[in-house]
Length: 263
Image 1: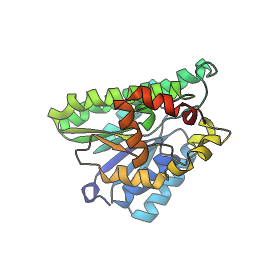
Image 2: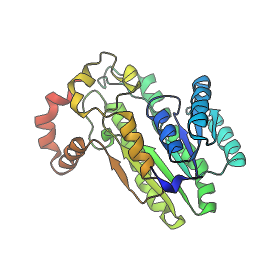
Image 3: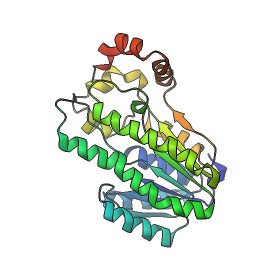
């Protein structure tokens, strides 16, 4: 899939399920060693064994609660002592589709801790290493919600707007150090993400033709590691919509509101 990755090491947060799990398998399929991070250590152990048996690469794993900033530092320090890292993929995250009024503030805090602050802190801990190495690729899994905010996703969209803004600034800061920064902005992906975000299942039904398979997103993400790619935007139709929104937002909001409310 990506010859550049042969013998390289890819570090992945949120690797115990969904897109993160698929990213680990597709990286290993490209002969990369992987380091898996998530809270569910039992699931990480299972995935690690599967990868090692299937691809004969290294597949280490560590418990990580992305919202525990002390643990972030401890785990990052351990990894930097034990491993050479070539790419960091920040995939951990969650959302909730609810009106701004009815979204519990504790959920808003948890979303920002997970999707933004944890991502920023973990990234920050690896920047000095990549700068010293004069190479590296940081990939942030953002969302099409970072391009166009829709009703019932105000807090989630806010977190992804933050990730996109952070990454765009970081890309310019690190360019002189030969460190690449890419944001991956997928639309809805058929994963357990929606078990929390959309318990009713109505949203996935209403946007069925736009729903992505996690395998497709993982494949495209792994394929661009080592390449100068600013963004990966999926699916094609949704990306066209967000581009139009950037030009004529009020028109898109006027005509699209009823469709956007189908969450």
